[in-house]
Figure 1 (tube, rainbow, N blue to C red):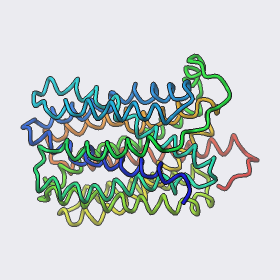
Figure 2 (cartoon, one colour):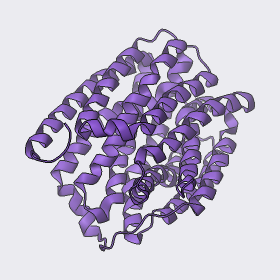
Figure 3 (cartoon, helix red, strand yellow):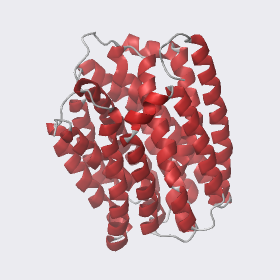
Length: 387
């Protein structure tokens, strides 16, 4: 067994903790007696924090030339602030506390993925073979978390969350760090990324698709309850989706060779379109569980390919900054807007209407992906890459 097992352990238990937040935080807020609009605002506060926190901590890791130490800071901060968050029940107090909590929690995921990508290059293994352990952690804790929370009650959510974060901290401490770039990192160089049109157009294209993904992240649990399911169904839905995601990551060393990254992104966009169409029409939670298989194909292919492709658009010394900028768009900006859209729709309509909206948004994203691919391949003819 090579030295990457500690990094795999960190990813497993960190994403286990993220399962608890993504799958059950909306249900926890509902148990506090909050309205759909209030839940939407609180769910938007976390991604709002990540918009600034993701690129900030990514830049600091590039500047300090260590991903591991910044990751330790973020996980420790999340553990401490999370304890305060789950002691408070007042809506207006929860808004700034949730923002502070996600200032630490949200960058940890991107930092972990950035570290995995860098270590995979050094160790000569595929990024997917390391990243799949995060998906496995998400899958198994979504199943186990649903069962545990059904037994102990949703109000005890913090104890489950803290358990996973503490173990993630342990593995992070012993995990290998990234090899630092020899080039100095200056803030002015990071700010110049705003003039990189290839990068900006790529992020814009990703946003159209990631918006639908983040809406689903926030509201699938409430949709399952609306369809007649309970916490166990929520856990099973995430288990099925993320288990297939882990399989896609594990096999990435084979399928990523066959097509150009932008071709794979377009294929993933098409799968998202089909997925939301089926989700809008599901008659019961059992049918929804079957549709969840498409989560692994759509997100697994899109995220893994886009995360690695963005490295081609960046200078080496700003790789972590770029990674977390991408994640800021995928999970941050998309999460804010998606939560607000979902909360508003939830106030006036059934949640199936929300999935019809996501269907049309994904169609727009697919069109953008195809246009970006055509433009990129036209301007980069002669490159020795599959199409």
